[in-house]
Amino acid sequence: MKRLIATAALALGALVTLTGAGSGAGKPAKPVARGNWVATAALTPEGYHVLGNQAAPLRLIEYVSYTCPHCAQFEVQSEAQLKIGLVGLGKGAIEVRNFVRDPIDMTVALLTNCVSPSRFFPLHTAFMRNQAKWLAPASSSTEAQRQRWNTGSFTTRTRAIASDLKFYEFMEARGVNRIAVDRCLGNEALAKKLAAQTQEAVEKVKVNGTPSFVMDGVLLAGTHDWASLKPQLDARIR
Image (cartoon, rainbow, N blue to C red; front, side, top):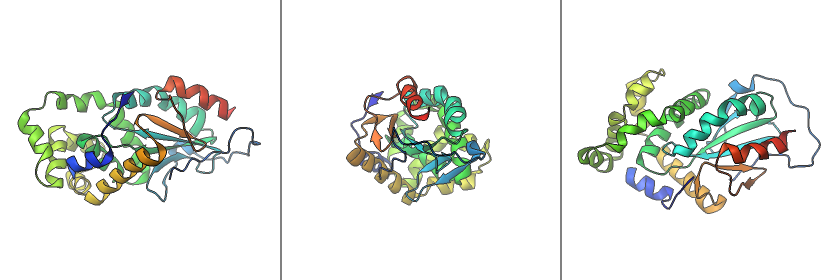
């Protein structure tokens, strides 16, 4: 788990409440409503994306960063098990909160958060599962490219990142055309909102790395991967 020393304000400068749902251990289990929960997505009033039964007794809040390798690893290891054993049964819901670390992370977050709630999770998963592929060019980027990513207007910078890392092609392959992508990349109000949410996570929730998790309104200290999270989930959903 990579420790972070830069806050969202720094990430935004480069480019531009705690709501733990859960019944708590020891409470009687409530009947679970039936539904196609793995296809049920919604947006909270604060602007976070939720997958599953919003009335479920357990909500897992994930703080994730698109440029965090550990977050990508968590997605690969946990996705099927969470959807089958938690979301699909209606016993729990997953809430994703972006924790923006850098200009590339912000650019991807703009793309995933500007689509409809029903499209967020497929796109989120696609970026996570393909992280090694789309992020690889960043490690061999030229000085000229990095200059474009960090100078000029907000939209100029996000579009330069999207172009160099082939996000236009990535999004088009998933049904989002260039006009829509440019609209997402120019959404400075959304960027400020994402940065503010990240800053709130640092200051109020005390998140200092990704991935991090909240259950029953409590940040799970020392839990930053699927191996350490799974036993805690199992104990709550039996």
